[in-house]
Image 1 (cartoon, helix red, strand yellow):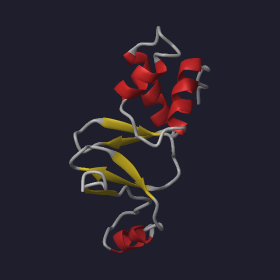
Image 2 (cartoon, helix red, strand yellow; image 1 turned 30 degrees about the vertical axis):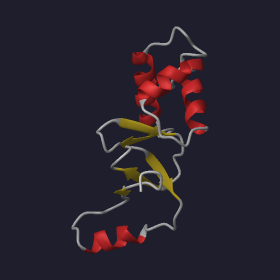
Image 3 (cartoon, helix red, strand yellow; image 1 turned 180 degrees about the vertical axis):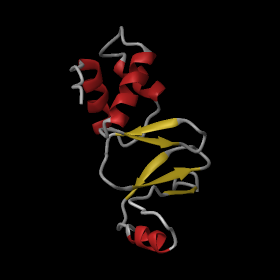
Image 4 (cartoon, helix red, strand yellow; image 1 turned 180 degrees about the horizontal axis):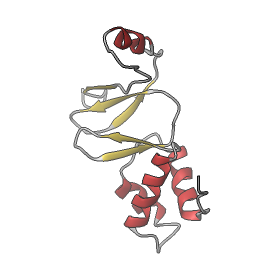
Length: 126
């Protein structure tokens, strides 16, 4: 497998996401990263985000409005999507990985994982 050339801009995007709990869009990341790297383009941000997702270093979440949101926390966890304000929030809860066993009992193939989103109204919109 080919190695990926080091990029300060990519590292800045990764660092930004590692400290964000907001699950920002590429546009939000672009606006914030631009303060440090004024010559960065939105296309560069998108290319680097896609590369980081492909490498498993960042998660992509589809928001309620259809926008791509990004999460620097790649550990298995669950998300809540507010159908009013469109925020994406982490849910701190026990694992429901046993759902894979339930699915495997009813599926002729091999279920190896799952993605679960919870949705409704966040506490600020409630």
